[in-house]
Image (tube, rainbow, N blue to C red):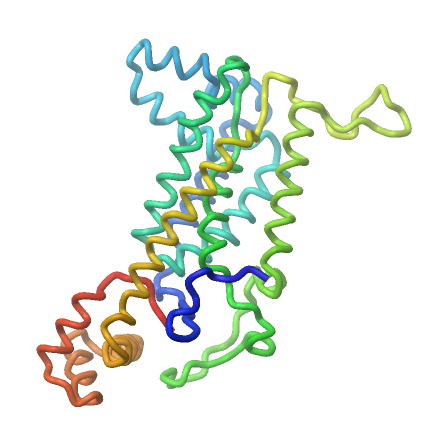
Length: 314
């Protein structure tokens, strides 16, 4: 079972999702679909002309085509070579991305995406010098960055809460439970990471070598694109993993500093958020928190201000 390396801070620390919808993850998914519609029926030509290769990037730099170089990051991260590749990319983006966006919040998640969509490709530009004509594409590096964050803030195993359905004490009306498409993997997050790794190996060999039919070795079950294309490179993947881990670890460290301020601050922030989720206005939530804890209004306001925007501790 994955374990959060900073879950133990004077006891167990559990983070909860922010109330915002995973809009950034939804934009990634829409972008992936959009780029596939551009490439459909002429994938090889589209990928060779729009995705990442050492020679292509060098040409853009030498001709100072900075706008095209910026667009290249989007094409390289979100392009697919067939509908199956696109479908699995969408699913991995949703499972890893929506979880991280809920835990980290939109601002920190955006930073993670920016690093995941740029740093691995910059490393690839150096790492792929021996194969300057090979075109790299796909969301593998971005998913590795998400997994780096996922290792720091993995989902809480369902078995810790029985079926996984529980209601917080401040919820007035019981909400209808909606099935979570990630639920079967939450019981064992390593299973899902293993599935992702297996899928990336499949795409790597599919694109570069193809999969031959064992009954008729001269034909392919899965036709390759050729040795001029690839979806995976080890060193950029490690860099992407490190970027995601770093962003999430920094967010967790910042959030858990609250325990250095004492249990009263923890109780104040928890009560304040409970009131906000009941549609109480900001100022009224501060006053209600102050009355509940018997603290001056100004002191509660300062507590909330110091910890505004940090990850939410349940």
